[in-house]
Amino acid sequence: MSSRNEKQKRNPLSAVKILVGALAFLALSYVMLAVLQHRIRSHSSTNLTGLEKAMQIYGNDSDGKLPPAEDASELKWIGVNYRVPSTDADLRYWLGNMVWYHRFTNEEITAATGLVETEIEESKRKFDIRADNRPEQAKGAPILVLPYPGGRHPRIGFLEGAIEPQRETKLSVFTPWDANSYVVVDVPEAIWSNLGLTYLAHTHIDTIWTKQGIELEKLEWNRYPDGRLDIERKLPNGIAFGVKVRPTKDAVLMEMRLTNGTDKKLTGLRIQNCVMTKMAKGFEQQTNENKVLQNPYAACRSSGGKRWIITAWEGCHRTWANERPPCFHSDPKFPDLEPGQTARLRGRLSFYEGTDIEGEFKRIEPTGWPKERN
Image (cartoon, rainbow, N blue to C red; front, side, top):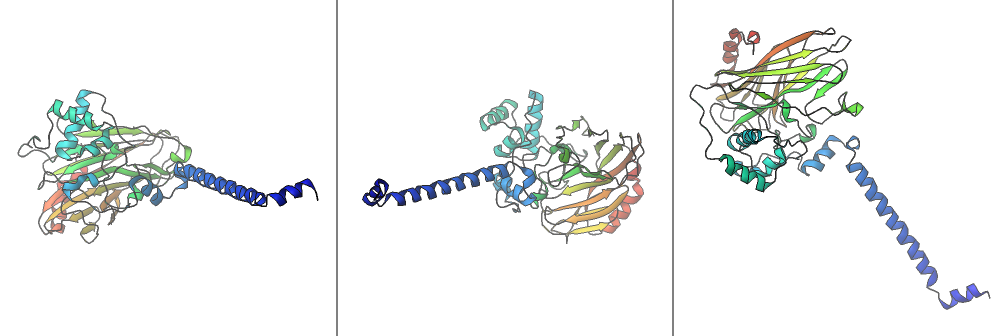
């Protein structure tokens, strides 16, 4: 008998130990490979469906309901789009915007600004900004319109269809009957052309830029003392678009401009403009039963039945609504544009108290709102 066989005979467990060790090594290797694959998947948005990415960002309840107003901390948001105020004046403006009007918690202010709670509390004291000392709106003043600060997702549901919303396209329009209620208007939410999805104000499906790995710069609304707002963006291929907003006592008047800065004709210039009702009391129900769509007008009725929010756009090619966010649309279409050409379309948003919504449409029509310049 060989010396090797003699050793195995004296130590019969050695072969078992070797086998167990080999199996343990294989199991460990499998676990490490699985972890590595998970990390790669977690950091590669191209491998995630919209729902998977929403769950990763907002938690498993990607279709969460609106919590009670006193529990605003449950309004989830991922702070990837935060903007740190660059000056004291900027910080004071955004704190007032968030505390006085949007009633943000410190957690939501952190998500919007990147500031930690101690910085937020110190700044509130410095500027004397508290929830109970909000400035009064002057009687007969225009409808209150403010840039939406981010930090709180503007939707209740279908969050997987709006990952990382960009705040520079979004406006808060406050209702005349409740100073704490507002709708968020996304203008534009999306721009389509013969080139494909040319612009999108959140992450959902690929645009012509995300396909190329191009990240668009963050912008801000320009603010004016009389309440007007405007913004302009030039895309990498030369297409430029801009929005002007002018609040009046009766309506918020909007104008969108689109310029073809490419060397080829642009066609199929469809726009999505979205009105989200999550934070308007009485309008937050996830249903389309409270919508009236009569091109170019799209209207949403309150749960009480006597209050309405109405939007309309010149050149409207489609009115529609989605019960999940919830939201409603009057979506316009620009004419085809030759290289160097510019076109403008006008829109509006208004409020109505009553039961004759079609009568209100008829009242609005002769005002000539598509011809009003901002």
